[in-house]
Length: 310
Image (tube, rainbow, N blue to C red; front, top):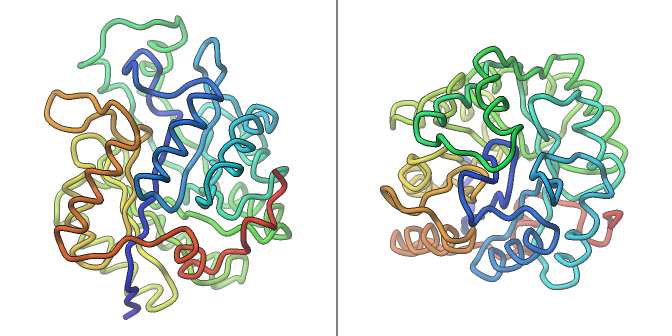
């Protein structure tokens, strides 16, 4: 079994799941996203996972030009690995979702590994007032939402991004997604080492019980052996508990306001950096060392920041 000496912290700075009204600390404008990303990197995040938003409405925005203002600032001010979303929003087509990664050629792009129900509507139990008119329908509509990631969609992304030498953060929300990845690996459309982000706690995917974490780890071990690098994402209140469990087994971790708005029971996180510092305290308390961006590039065999198009 592959063992790495240092743990990679990823930070998902702002994403499509949470709407701006849910937290005043969610970065929306390009300046806010850049500042939040740089602060997260300074706190210990080796990888920054990024979405773009309309600065006025806060809606997810997958135009490449929406990413460039904050990408330029991030690259100028820190050495973190940039991971661009191909998830965008479940309401977008795969061509829309993949466009920033296709044009900007990042070192890493996220890739959801299967079609699934994607239930955001439980958030309405906690949040009742919204700043923008699109936010409530966005959440309510997820009762009938199918997040499309067909085999044809996945094959299209792999074929079109492959020439850029961009690697993937394979987001696996259930065991079937691991088998989907194994299918594409067998066909040679993706190459090891596979950076597998097992996602826990999204309604429509696997839960966040310790048994669920172990089940996904065992399945990945069996399917990929030494050819993968394991990371975990716990959504909502499971963020830190899932991270601690996985880290104790040598797994990498992802935190950030895309995945959870909270830093503790009933307490909103004031920044992405605050979550990075908290998970870093947990990791170092377990006697683990934190990977630098350079070490993360080596562990994941990335092409390097000089090979991106921004």
